[in-house]
Length: 319
Ligand SMILES: *Cc1c(COP(=O)(O)O)cnc(C)c1O
Image (cartoon, rainbow, N blue to C red; front, side):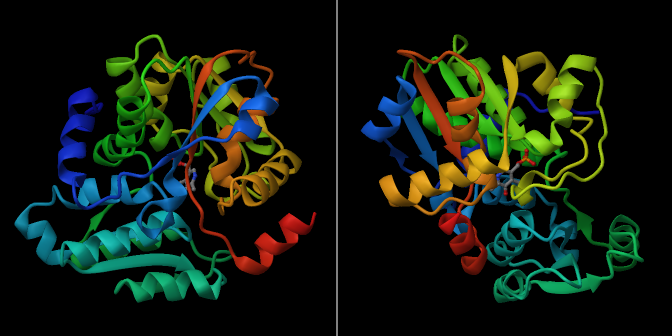
């Protein structure tokens, strides 16, 4: 198995130049006062298609051979990875098929189609999406790109930390959300190279702390799909590639409850005037409530995405 390295992150940064936004780093004196630290928010909610996932998807598709490009890409996802693959495929002029559950929000299906991808739906109660995806990929000769456990995806996600470390020297801590670990493992690769003193912490939903359990057990622990408003981190297990990188490179894994995520969403809307999705608020909620002493420290916080269903978002803000 090929484990990605820092060099892969540096190459991804080249491929993404002019394609991905170099997202801004926001400050908030209110947030600083709340945590007694200096916080630097890396705003991937302002990335193309609304989340960092564009980085990994584009980096993977840009490395297809001409034969692969002709046949196109296939992904299964109902979330940000689907839109990231669809947009990247359009930019690179290749066909894309996205396998989504029949009952996925209509807005998400429409957005994915809007980027020009073909959407194939399945019944998630009776059909196995991985089997469907593999069959389709085989029949059509398409290349399947998974949402996190792929070296090119991980390398692309690592450019989030690379940019933040370039913009903000001497970080003591870097907090990122954690689902399957593509973002966290990529950020570990960048931080180990450019900020070896920086402690990298992943934050996952309290209802689904498989990453924390895996780190403690020293092996990948699989759990049932967790119930949480952080729908981008409802993964059941870390990946075969992401886990060893995380195991070797993170300082800790913290958790945040749904109530803490809702509180964070209100803070971002009210005080910082930004829309962040529940999963995107994990790092801030974990830094605030995760029990790590950050007094006086310089802390990077990755806001990983801003894609919300407006009605659901309004409910969360209303409390
Ligand atoms: C996918 C996603 C995550 C989790 O990323 P992993 O690479 O699976 O750990 C976090 N936030 C948002 C907004 C996402 O879309």
